[in-house]
Image 1 (cartoon, rainbow, N blue to C red):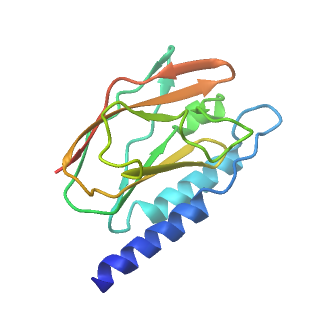
Image 2 (image 1 turned 60 degrees about the vertical axis):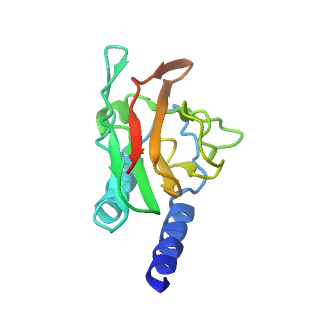
Length: 166
């Protein structure tokens, strides 16, 4: 029980630390400094227990790369999605609203009815180039979702990836 509480507290701290308000760059694009922050975040986060890093999303020819399904077998996982460095520097970000920069509701939409509204808690970080969701895994099931990316006013949805809470 103590171990679970420690993991939850550590994940909550990491989620709050990573979800600092993005700031739009003058050009509307992410900078190389943003990419260094993403790389540092993933170098640490992807090696910790109960954390999953989905392969970076690449945008090419008006389409988004296939996002693999994810399987989780226990509670309390932090999931990271990122925009590839080349796509990010070209101006692609997860869909976000500059008036509410940490709100991830435009970036990820669950198509499956969730057992509770807080089954997945999602935030954006680093100028919209990182999307993180805390998966409580309170109920086993299949959760279909859609991720959307944008470059200026152009918005591209993904295919239909799935999170399986086994």
